[in-house]
Image (tube, rainbow, N blue to C red; front, side):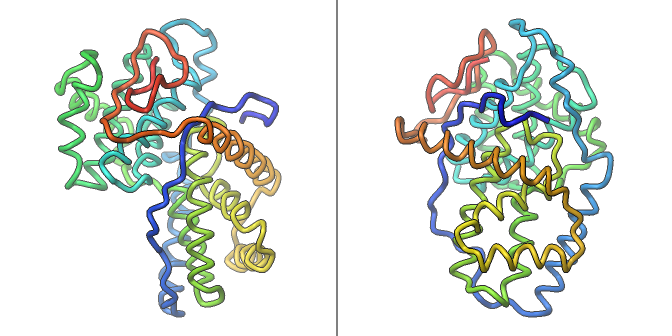
Length: 308
């Protein structure tokens, strides 16, 4: 796990302000029971070895032109956010795609940055197929063109099959956003919907920042979700305390040292991202291209896939 003293990734991610509401104030004890069961199921899934990730970047110690690094991963994640925003798809699909990438690379060696680019593109394509089947063709037919000649559609399909085999068809990972939303739903009978929706929106952006940061790869999604929720409720002591009590009531076992690290890291990312976005506003009018493999500074612009 990275420490706070290490440099932060240079993120240019912005929070979405689409006005959508998750909670409408119609919560009941029956719906609460269902949400609690679903939350417990997600937490049990996290305990399975098949969904865990290791610190795979330690296998690429040399900063050569071909080796992948944390900056490669950050740039890929940001590119994915730009793609899904372009197609108006829920950003949670990026967390799913990045889960594929992290789990595949936890079990397999990546030969070079071109291969990493192909794994990443195929992971997004596969996540769209599974979770947004009405949109995946729109993205799939464009990815080879966006790769600027690095690979064809046949390469994409072939890599998809390799990813599916490596993941043993476990294509529905629990995400930190899902855990956070289900956790909030358990408070729907106690807290006004307007407050919960505000907390959900704020915590979602914290979660999206964590997806871009390699420091959170080995951390359980529950820890990320709780950290995001606690940060989002920091100015509302009542909600903050109710949240902590509810976690205790349902028997959530939490490593509070890990939570403390995550909360500080998320606040640092939030501050850094806010400063970056205030200096330059991103545009999603054009389809962003896949990063080049020659070198790897931060993304050249919002119109290109981050350079590698």
